[in-house]
Length: 374
Image (tube, rainbow, N blue to C red; front, side, top):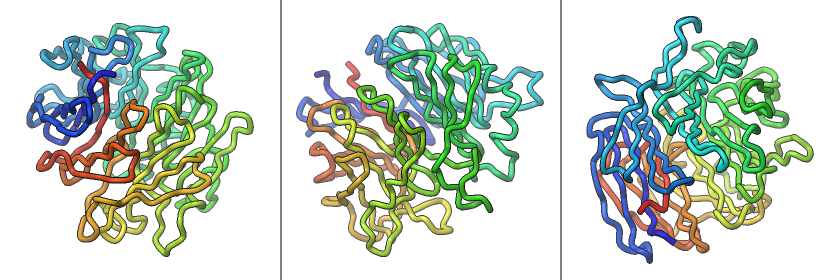
C-alpha cells in the first residue's frame, strides 16, 4: 500500500502531511495557495495522481485548481463552477465540496457550492457546467429555503455521493434543505428525509428542510447511508427507505453527544464508523462539549458506541472539527485523523484507541482527506 498523505485544506492555504509506511513519522509540505481559502482537496482514485482543489482566492474569486503531478504544479479551471446569468442572479460564493465520478467515467467530477448548487465537469476539472436537473428544478427554491433558513456561514450543497453500482444514481445533501436522490444522472431529484428530525421547525419531521452536516456511503455496502445531522445521528437502508436514529444509542451521561459535523466509515468494515461530538447548545462557533474532545466509535452500524479519548486533551480544549475535517485511511487497521479549528491534526493508527497530535500551528482546518498519494 502506498504511504498515507493527509491533504489539509485550511482558511489560509493547502498543506500536505506525508506519513512513513508505519504512520509513525510525518513530514509537512507546503503551503500551496498561501493566504487563499481552501475548502476541499481530493485525489482522483481513478489515476492516483490528479488533485482537485476548491479555492476562494482574493483576485480570482471562487474557482477550482487542478494538478496532474501530485501537487507539483497547478492550473486553474478554464470554466469554474458558476450559475448561468439567467438563474435569478445567484452567484457562487465558494466551491465547498468535490467528488470524483464513477470508476467507469474517468474525467467526471462533481462540485457542490455555496449557495446550494451542483456542478459537473466531464474533462477532469477543467470546465464545469451547471447540473440543470438540480439547479433549475422547479422545487429548488422551496428545498433550499431563503437567506434566513441558512447556516451562519451560508447555505451549502455537500456530501455528493455516487453509487458504485450505477453512475446515474446520485445523492446530495444540503445545509440546509435535506438529502436528495437522483436515479437519472442528476436530471431529476427527490427528497429522502423520512425519519430525520428538524427540531427547529413546528413540524419536526418535514419532507425537506433538514440540516444534514455530512452523509457517507461505503462502496462495499452502497445501500446504506450514515448521516451526521444538526439534530442527531441517523442511518438509512434502501430496503425500507427510512432513516433510523442511531444517536439515541450513544452513552447517556448527561452530555448530548449525537450532534457533530463529520462522520466516516472504515475502508474494510462497513459497520465501523466514527464521529466527533460538538456542543449542542447555543454556542457559535461550535466547541467541544465541556472543553473535553472525544471521538465516538461504533462497530455495529451505530447500535452501540464506544468513547475514544485516550491521548486527547482532558480539559480546556475548545476546538471543534468541521464536516470535511474527519477522515480515515485505507489500512486494514484503520488510521483515523481529524483537523481542528485550532489548526491541529490528530491521528490514531489503532482505529481510535489512542490519539496523538501530529501537526500544530496551522490555520483553521476546513477539510482533511487521507489519500495514498505518491
